[in-house]
Image 1 (cartoon, rainbow, N blue to C red):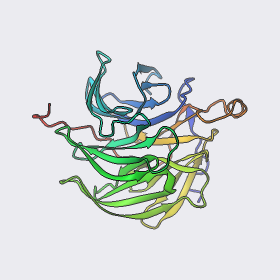
Image 2 (image 1 turned 90 degrees about the vertical axis):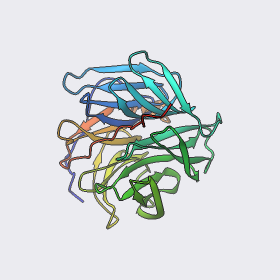
Image 3 (image 1 turned 180 degrees about the vertical axis):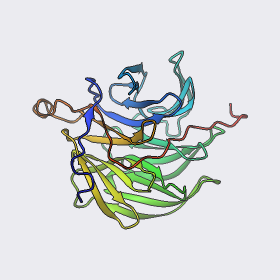
Length: 300
């Protein structure tokens, strides 16, 4: 398990998020879009000059995906919404739950441009969330419920498998996937965190089909072969709460890692001054491009 030994992620700036999440490489802008959920911010980091553009949001957003040059789609406290980067206005699409004690968490688009995202309790209740799909016509479909913390997801390079994490289960599930229909098959467990450090949180799938999993409370990102179910290596970070990761850069060889200060005591924060930072490193493997939300022409 020495594959990633010596890789040292570095913070990209002095900004420390309360709860960093949702890194997503925007190929059209060559920037890294990410979220501070509790800080209610949407952020765009430009690695070319180190600058960062910040958008203040009216509510917590758990995930953001590209849509057009001036608009993204959010999965947030009040459901799915468009966010205009020029006017900085939120245009709500649909809230499938209509409850104040849940919010959307992690989400991504598949190769056909559908937006997949799930919910979690805001008050610590187990199995209160669900997993959803929003199609290009803006209809929202509930795939399954009894989810505790809907988290990392991603697709195999050939698009036939959807990987999914409900953090409370400590498992990565694999579903057979039909990209034409947007349907999932039965689930099977491919990774277990029973003996791992921390909890499985966000996830990326690289171009070779391996899984990169953030360890919340475990201070690392681990790399897994989902076919064999074995850990191939891990990257250690100087903070406990590692939340998500995504590949980016011109060659998709940069691994961006979000972290959180949320949940740490004052003493822990003093011991972890980099908690909440956005980190980057080059681990060797390359990632897959992120897909945008693809809205159909007749969608209102």
